[in-house]
Image 1 (tube, rainbow, N blue to C red):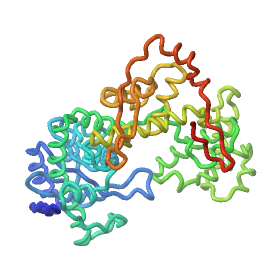
Image 2: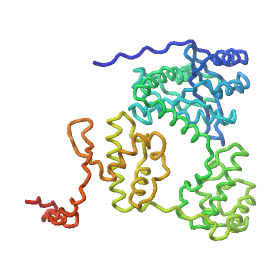
Image 3: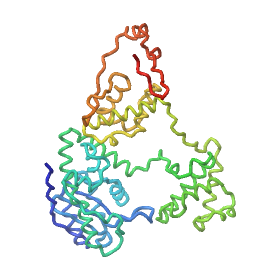
Length: 434
């Protein structure tokens, strides 16, 4: 029997366009321990996105705050930074970053309904409309995704869209929290939320973003050094002008200069599309790279050349992980990536310690990793129990091998090396043993 649609949350709505309205809004929010939060911004033509709207919900009211009209939002950001308040978002990376850009810090208590959904068996990552439908049985009217939020006045459709983006956050939070508690995964969720906030705002020096430029793999070590210097110069230049880096100098031009490594401005004149008046700064970046000792130049990234057994066992763990996720109502791709699974396999093949990847930390290490390691160690086997079932596989714990078993197998000619393999027939199929 189909479930009836849930009741649409009907809350008072206020469009905040005046400082006095903002003050009243902040007074209301100050009393709320739980707030839904979303932003609308435009980031295509700026180094950092331009904030255009802020949407907030409480259990009693919805607000759409217009930062172009209502004055300073310092008081609002202070409320989000209060440790006594939980900020509910959906896929909140950019919203958290916006708070970080505006206030210099991220909200300390974030609840991301997209992450929580993956921890209780829903699809991950799931869009907001899909989450609202699957969890609350509501259909959202979408259609303003590509709108220019800088334009004023706002249309009724834009305002309705903005309200709906926070209308369902608190009802979703309530249902997801109930399920997390039922499955005893609330601590897992809190761990994931904290990690997501950290990723959103951290400037990780170990991440070499310049290596992501298309065409970087065609450069030698000296060319890589030039590309790295040019990337750093372009990023600072873009921040100073508040423009997207690629808008000032395209990636393909950066690679072309790194390949040529020019020493004179005349050599740059043959490259079309460079920012005007920046020739000398570009040449300085090239000179810094050329002044490096050969050993100080970055090395090309090595491609994965895993042996066949690592690839095979990594694929096996993918199957085991999918089975685990299905049995325990988890999104498999939230638990681990394929690269992390292969890293675990590699550590076992090479006899080294477990790798420093998310799968080997926190709740994953306690709840998921042991089952995967049991498969790799041969303590557990996997078999098809019922091909018609939604969960067709079964893990079987194996009895410890007796010390004399291997010798008996060897005498019987049943060791792996001694087993006779079926001979291929003319058509390429395998002959069944008699």
